[in-house]
Amino acid sequence: MSDLNKLTITQAAAGLRAKEFSSAELTRACLDQIEASEHRLHAFINVFPEVALSAAEKIDAALAKGDELSPLAGIPYAAKDNFCTENLLTTAGSRILKDYLPPYESTTTARLKSVGAILVGKTNLDEFAMGGSTENSAFYPTKNPRDESRVPGGSSGGSAAAVASDEVIYALGTDTGGSVRQPASFCGVVGLKPTYGRTSRYGVMAMASSLDTISHLTKTVADSAIVLQTIAGRDDHDSTTGNIALDNYAEEIKKPVTGLRLGMPPEYFEAEGMDPQVKAVILSAVKKVEALTGTAVTPVKLSAPDYALACYYLIMPSEVSSNLSRYDGVKYGLSVPGSDLFDTYLKSRGQGLGAEVKRRIILGTYALSHGYYDAYYKKACAVRSLIKRDFEQAFEQVDLILSPVSPTVAFKIGEKSNDPLQMYLADIFTIPMSLAGVPAISVPCGVVAGLPVGLQIIGRWFDEKTVLRLAHHFEQSKN
Ligand code: GLN
Image (cartoon, rainbow, N blue to C red):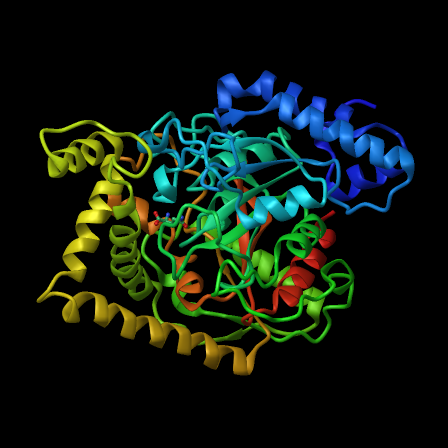
């Protein structure tokens, strides 16, 4: 069977059980695809062929014995390079961690390993996940497989590009302000950000801890449900994970969607920089959703998304400035010896961290400093509560909210890299959900000039099942 790397999780799991091919063959197909396209795409920072093939052979042996295995067993995936993987290079896209070998494994990759998932490599990202285009990687930018002159989005751009180009069957990412949903939209794949607290952050390089959400990218919504089933749930290593029972996502998505109440925030369509063609694609997707549910979309009141953007760009850098203080040239990572300890800090951080990371550390340190804390950080936290309340009120009237993922399709490499404000605007529709902590998915809904556009479906806290259900029916209705 050829093109095994093009299969979905569902198809690959069935093929493995029917003995149509082995996990080693499937893994080899992905590694071949990586070899064929990496020199153009640069989706990966490191690939581990021997580790992957030897894990695959173990699964083949278990399958041959007839063991009952997880649907993810034997299936190759990639993890964003901010997930710690024991004794496998983990760089976070930064020079400061260029040669870092973690002594332990993140909860998410550990859970995947325990069910026999095959990690083939670690994907490129904006340094420490700060960015929306993957151009802030210390190593190289990743290209969008749908148009190589364009960015794949970010910061999980390597993961999105790897899935979109069939280098792997699915991939892990992190979404702090949109970093899985926006690249999913730009590359035409499915990206789910679960509820904050549904997935464990343990062992993932912290960016902004109150927002960081372990998320994933897949080719289909049914695959997204399968991955969520394995990675979600309480973890004693991350006290922010909720002890809330998981649903049977693969079953839930099949239930009918008729009667679901849908909302849409009119303010979002008035936002600065909203491309009229993207808007038209989203509005026609909304019509299709209405036909599926048999209900009309009603307007819901969410604050204008620019408030969320301003609030995010205070809270996020404040947490960044605190979280990144651990990279000091002493404990681990790059160390550039200075004349004294302070000089060592300055030289190591000065040479090890990139411009965007430094910008955020400076912004955050300022916002938290004595005399400005009340005016900036505390005020932003109050605005965050109001944004959360908007969602609480909206979800009294509707079950799901529909919105664009990004105001534009994938932009050109270099187009926004010298203009941070323009870059920040690319996340204007994903940041409110991150501040509120609600689950949201990006599902492909059309194209503008050949480039993919994603529809965002947003749900109540811990109600991933309804988000996935509508997304699944929408995806199926297009085929
Ligand atoms: N693009 C946003 C930022 O630069 C989101 C990043 C993320 O979700 N990791 O902060």
